[in-house]
Length: 177
View 1: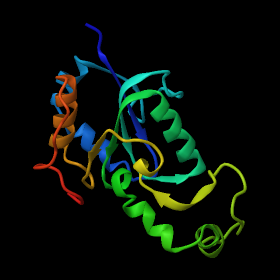
View 2: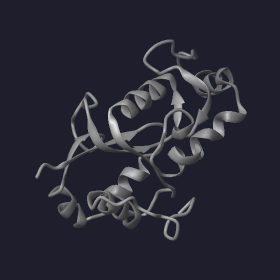
View 3: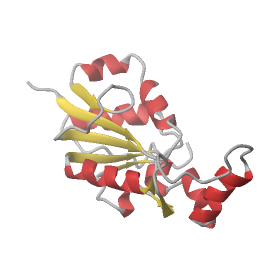
């Protein structure tokens, strides 16, 4: 029996959701027997695979690079999971929405810099006017709230999917925890 192909993606967020994924601890061994982790910050793949069964997406969509990435991921993923409050609601990254992009860049690269006080025109991805949760751009199949979501909830979701069931987090997951 072939293993389930899994990817993880980090958009605009703090990596706390990936840390929570690692907090599954020894249960990772049980998962590793059933999945192939093909892409994400935990592996060295540079290009998103042609096709994966499950992708866990951490973080909000805040730049043109994020937007292109999430659209590509959706097109190449069977089951897309919004992992954590940033992916589900925009959470902390969306706090910049009360400012314009120019105000954010000026504050970051001019007002708070002692050297070369100039907003970059390359390397830094172009910011979108507003930070948005993943589902505002692509269809999401499963929402896992939490900041970060608990390791138990992440393990539960993956285990249920591996058993061919759709996970129900109604009684175990909540925003901010």
